[in-house]
Image (tube, rainbow, N blue to C red; front, side, top):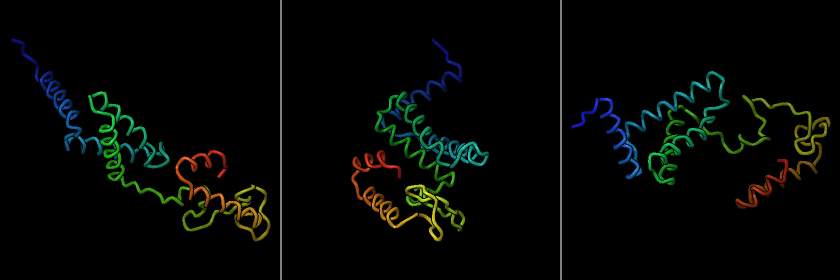
Length: 169
């Protein structure tokens, strides 16, 4: 009779557990907690050490790595993607990440720490700003810029992408 070492027995049990997880499309809560804690710690460390611009820097790579690892363990793609998304969201929550509002993510957002950033060029045409103008050089540039933003916000998915690619917003 073949005798397995304790390490080999543990590896065999882990393999069976992962196969069972793949069939169910669920992962043990202890394993999820351990992985999300490790991801949150990595996100915080990279951000505080200046290696990442925000806590969200590893969102895509972590989701991809988890999803591909689960797929290699026999998970269906959709279940693996759903689990990866949930795990990364939990890691971001544990890391204390807060998503900015849509407006804060736009290039024309100009408020930093309660003070306005001084502009010297027009937001739309980039000509020098005349006296007493803070964002646009003329009413024409202001109106054109806001109309383009309105069209982009009101567009459906595919046409919004086409408009964003064609414009310089």
